[in-house]
Length: 498
Image 1 (tube, rainbow, N blue to C red):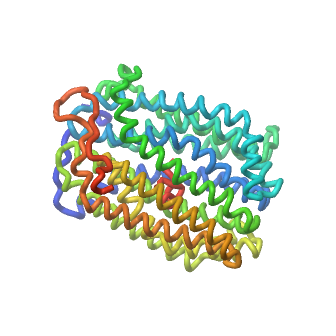
Image 2: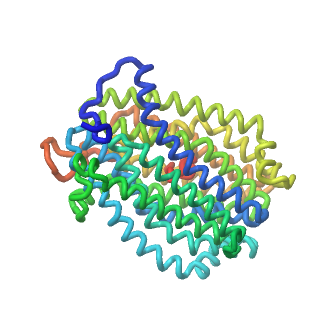
Image 3: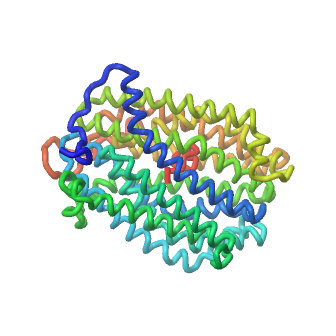
């Protein structure tokens, strides 16, 4: 058996916590690298566009979040590929994995077609949103330029999420990392050429960043697809012979992934409302400071999401083997790691808040506003780690409906409803009112998801029936009435990873 085919059929029950920690980290490091690389793409986009001025800095994050929200409908469903692939591998049925990966292409086709009319009419409907949010004309014009081009990245991004799930589920995350690194290089070069008009290319400014992003997503999807079709993957996972639409597999992805998709749309939609409607009336400096703060929060939660993706795979594999206690142990280890990391980052936010803001914008008004954003971010870091960890553990077990409801109600009830009320009832608090409600939302969400995991309703969920073979997935126990979004750029503050 070659190294490429050497995916373990069984996962030893390693009782030594130190060995379990090392095993989780070995799987997680490529995924963390993938998330950090994706973070670098967003971070570099933001930094390169920021050179154009405070208005461009204020426009780039709301525009990118909106594009992500549109893609969430498909990405949330495609994200379920990892759950099914990892559990199929744990059950000793790796031949089912390729068929699940291919369904993400059909999901991408449907959602991509729905995005085209939005791209063609962006100036009309987004202009109305910008006017409602009291954006300045300069900021609104830049947002429209980015969104109408960026929407073309929706289809390839959905494919990437599905194929990432395939490679992570079969515990080959290095391939997903290579694809991200390739897209990162393309994005950086494309930005340099198109934002500033270097080497004879047209100077497109923020629109150039959007074009480079679309090209980078296409490159990433191409690398992942090419790798999936290699002979060694086809032999084990039937990746060449399982390309047809499979309603049984699609139905399973929809049952598990649709709640995640709805959760992501609602959760990320709340962040879009926060940045597009709640923050702009507080001034361009407050909006720019919020956008800078979000970039630093990416630095905190993206590595944690990488570890969470590894945890999702480990949990799914353990449950596929019929060893739920292994899943419990893996979640405990992951929580210790993410809590320690994000706690240290939160302390750094608190102590270095002004220098960190100055690195992006030397305007005293932006630095003052941004220092408060980082104070609030420091307060909820450990709870965000809790949210990321238990959300991915629950997802690996197939428990997605209850978390979706919890995230949806808390994000819109506390984060948006409370944030809007604070901005209108206590305008003298400035951005501190909305950010206070953001902190309360993430703290509550972390506690709720921890409670859900410890309650153990996920132990009753079955994604496959008990017979071996290519049988339709059966989902039971997802969101039982008796117990009854984070994904977010920070859903807690989490951006789905991609």
